[in-house]
Image (cartoon, rainbow, N blue to C red; front, side, top):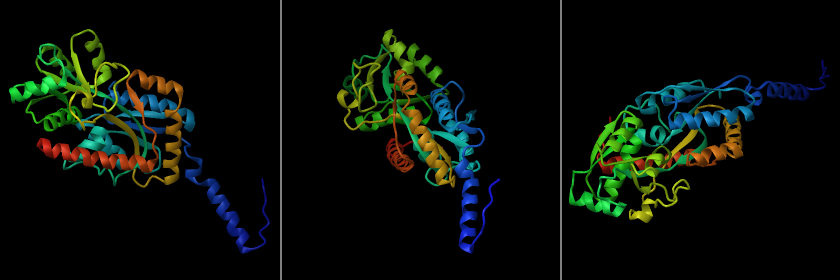
Length: 324
């Protein structure tokens, strides 16, 4: 046991401040497992990314990171739970283009405000999407697909899974000046089955899951939605190269915490996330799934989300998508 002789009021105050700082919960954080809410069911792309990051965070934080899958309402249910959790750093959530970038314009009664109800911890990465057509569609490239759609307005149709793939397709429609028919599906699997059977003409979705069918000749890739070609299929052009300048849309992931989470904890989580994203095994895992790492500060992450909300609000308005 250590003893201190107090010689003045100032000394007593200094000792008291030292003791409080040493016992501060933010200084010791984390002292127990951290819950990571994934707002989708197990096995999907968001869940896979979340679990990969969680395992690396455990190494940096020295505590278990427990995945809590809370699917439903296109990801907004679990995201709302994150927003309403205690702001103590022991509940964090995976954010994404759909839940943080698009949903604010699609759901007027959303249970959270992206810029007010969260502390934006860090970006994780982005995944390229691809415009895929059934082989029966007589278009060998994007320019030919646009020409075909203009010649036959309202005749071509496309599959969608949630708001992300829906609006990426609508972004093509608005930028190319064409009219195609939206056919929604409840999941990526039934949408893919519909495309493979020729029930729908095209689909915009995450590239990795479509790649085996492209390589087997069952589907045809016309373009990727990012500004750079995918290393998984370097022969597939970008939208810009294929004839649609200005098109840039990728699915991204980030980490958020409830608003009012202490800044020291947010900084600690950002530091741990950046360390995880720079680890070689995670980089290799992400490369295999065409996920590009995005390293940002909490402030840059918040700015990124703000810009994405504005970008997709314009797409929703131009496409005439009715808020749900």
